[in-house]
Image 1 (cartoon, rainbow, N blue to C red):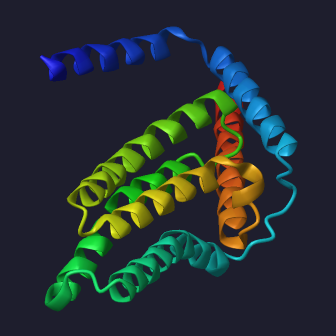
Image 2 (image 1 turned 180 degrees about the horizontal axis):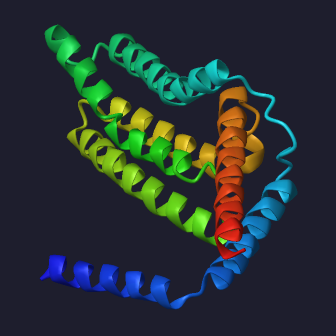
Length: 209
């Protein structure tokens, strides 16, 4: 049933494309490109030239995922060792703490898929909050479970605080842009999106002429 509905929607979209004239497609592509370009400029993104090197972009992309993971690993290691959690099974408790980070990957993903600052603020915030809330609930549920046990309450509390600050960090622009790998990734994603929309407009314009 779902596949049938999806097929009907796709067929309808294709039919609309046939109805819309090339000139109208060109005008629409131009409007979308200009709107996204103006939003990027309002966000302080310099579109005239790309000052970031490809290698630096890759490093920043990796850092966005690795740095929070390493920080939490250090926190989990400190908590489990400082409070001697698990006794002889301390390594197992540490492993549990590391696995508990999984929800935070959704928080990072929520930021990454909305790193294009030329998107409308409404859609960008909606998608970001939705994905981050899912990640926060995932890690938060495990954190609460650890707190309820009593034995590992300190680890659950640490996870809860870390996850909350992690999510808040990506939701507050003035916070996240202080980190070079975050700001560089956002700038690169925005430039790439605007450049792609411009190419789409130019192709539509050439086809319409």
